[in-house]
Image (cartoon, rainbow, N blue to C red; front, side, top):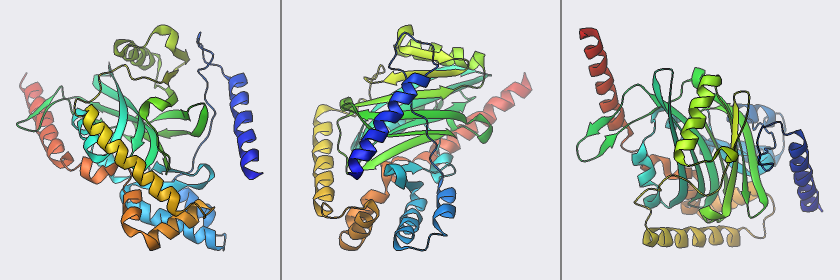
Length: 339
């Protein structure tokens, strides 16, 4: 009965969102239910006064997740990234996308590049299988440095994470085979969502996205970036400074490291791990009780759950990238002063 109620509630929310849609587009499917998931601190403030066993479990799981940069959002049974997580210091570049497949992240990457206010911008979208979770992301980055060259490691543009002033209202709905998995809306620099134990092929996922840019100039630059990536004008919806599109099949070339053999191996392992988790917890109803059971009975699996997006391994070269980026920025400033 509860599942039926949740299903009907979800369907009603989608129907209402379609009716309220004010995006200008020929594609009537460009809609997005609105939601604002709380951050970790807000969730803890809500849960602390509730003196029951479940609130204690909720707080415990979030304390375990916080060092990894994530928190758990119970209403939608999903993990999400914290605003000031440690990953915010790492920036982003193509090297990180190339490293994903080796860490069991078989995900579609859709980087959108454009220039605005004297900076090069990267707004990237991701969706797919992140180890034991199905998820999606939107990230905002920019830089004033054209490129950096680190012999034997990386040659290209390294982007810094958007500052608080550069954050934008972001939103997405993640759909798998006509089923809404979850949705989020927030002012952020890295909006994410991950569902534990859900196994998916990236092509099975559709991501409805929206982003509200700073002004009309930035909106047009972002739309130009979408167009250069391969999106048709009929696939892009906008109203004012808000732009929306459906991220289904990526237009950009995917990382060359995501070979068919590696993808098959990693997805086989991901599917096995999801099955093991679901099988071990199938008699447990509440997700929080599942976490407690796995923590006590299968600590290795629990550590895999905590390390969402394998961030610590993926960003291991971030310090070196930052060092070279700062040196390049200093050299550019010196050259400007000389001129």
